[in-house]
Length: 117
Picture 1 (cartoon, helix red, strand yellow):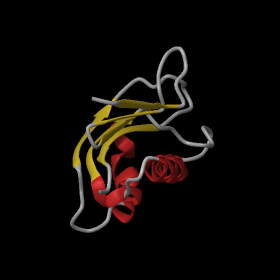
Picture 2 (cartoon, rainbow, N blue to C red; picture 1 turned 180 degrees about the vertical axis):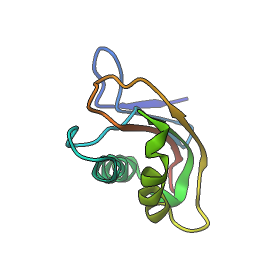
Picture 3 (cartoon, rainbow, N blue to C red; picture 1 turned 135 degrees about the vertical axis):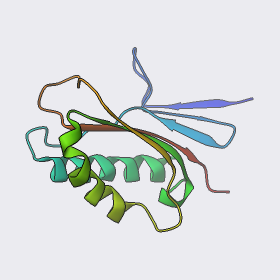
Picture 4 (cartoon, rainbow, N blue to C red; picture 1 turned 180 degrees about the horizontal axis):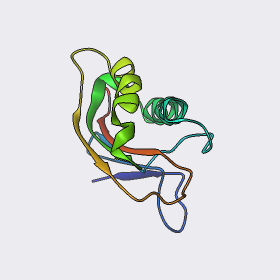
């Protein structure tokens, strides 16, 4: 049984792959001072890069947990999400309101994906 860890530091790994499944740490926006639309777009761009780095893609997403600073941002975040997820490949998903690690962060996502075979 092999476990591969990517970008491992003292507290966490950016990605862990085991048994054909990739688990990603929470991803946040590049610009923490941007609006919810831009934060969601850049956060999902980071997910795209991580998926590619382990041999996966959006069509292989298994689950996503989205954390929003305030549920009043739900519709705007979903507008970006709906354009990002390929039709017919939506993962299991949860979206919750959460206190963020930094006050300027509006959204964070953690995903699990299958590795393409």
